[in-house]
Image (cartoon, rainbow, N blue to C red; front, side):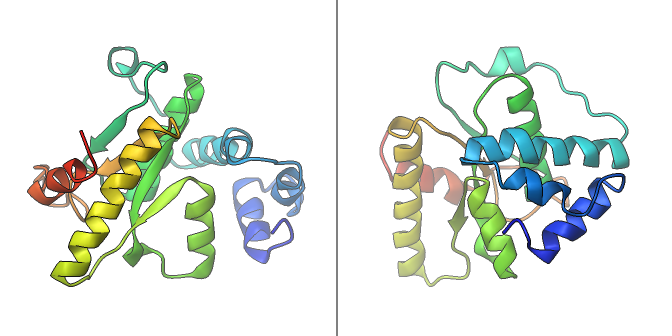
Amino acid sequence: YADHPLLFQVSKYIFPEKPPTFLGSLLKNVKSIDEFQSQIVIMVLERIIQKTAGTFTYSGIENLLNNNGKFLMMTNHRDIVLDSALLSVVLIENGMNTVEIAIGDNLLIYPWIKKIVRINKSFIVKRGLGLREQLKSSMLMSSYMHYAITQKHENIWIAQRQGRAKDSNDRTQDSILKMMVMGGE
């Protein structure tokens, strides 16, 4: 994938002062997802922050998270990719592991998007299923989240409701809470 045309486009946009093969050459040396996130993704995100926001600040992480234990973070979101990406910046800057991200299959409209979300430790939430299939899918996802935290020792990020909180209604959907308890305590 180091020679993929999309990677050239991203490289030219994010790092115009570098040759278009810049990201691809870095990618050739990456051996794991953690290396991909801590070496490539963080560099791209920091450059995006510089180009679009100028600055990015956060506070209170020392009161919320303890790197000795793993966590499930459930939050509202305005943009599932950008919000979870900014969370990854905060976690990496604080020497913590990034999160596995729950992302709806409705967002996976191109094959390259599927590849990017998979390499960024995402797991897929199936949408538009019938009642019986939704129950099975919810049980499987809940079991996976419990497994990821207790056995794989991964952190999880999940939105508190399907879709963006565009209307300032940031209440957690009951179905999300019900799904989480299906897999265990």
